[in-house]
Length: 83
Length: 230
Image (cartoon, rainbow over all chains, first blue to last red):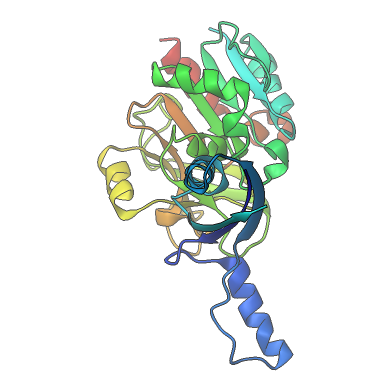
């Protein structure tokens, strides 16, 4: 079976996100100063062949741990759906 | 004593390093391609600055899984000497050969300028010719150089004297104003617990020749020859 994974990688909550901070500041220029604490991460999609959803989940988790996210600076979550 | 400089697609300081080792230090130096599976008998591996694999995903993340890095990791695990500069430092943290990570600079800008560094220990192969507290002027050129690690790791780095260089002002004082990128504890360079793997964000290879008007970087290469050959 082929599955599609939607992965979100975000900077750890405790870490300063300079990109998010710059975008937060620019909200004032749009007269949207009620918007705050913008944080910017990455959205990654990929397709994976696996016999079961749990096997696909295990492999995607491994890909996240080893390459797609760095646990020292980031956190990740993902969802799977049939491709 | 043979040095090896690894060249990744997107490395751009490899030739500077080769020039310093061969022409200034007078030692043999072998270029090593990222697809190679052998370190060709090199005794000291240098990972150069640049933008390996376009810095895609995160700086150093893709380089860490290149064929040559599997050899470098094995070499370092056996006690072999590895020194990463700028992007090389980022590759070493991604490889977990060095603790911590390098984040986007606090002001989210690429910073290219001379900075002052304070030598924090002379007990390392790359600082053995320096004195504790000695100030060096060495250029930085990076967008992702903000060293970060958790509190426990920082304590361990301090307790084991693994912090080699910290950003300081011209008087040698370590202050927040002298911290160009927001690095934790002003950290500019570290080594591993085994003291055989070294990383720093500033570029000593860019200031090792009197032709360039600054030879502070040469003190680091002199230190390597002083201790590794001793």
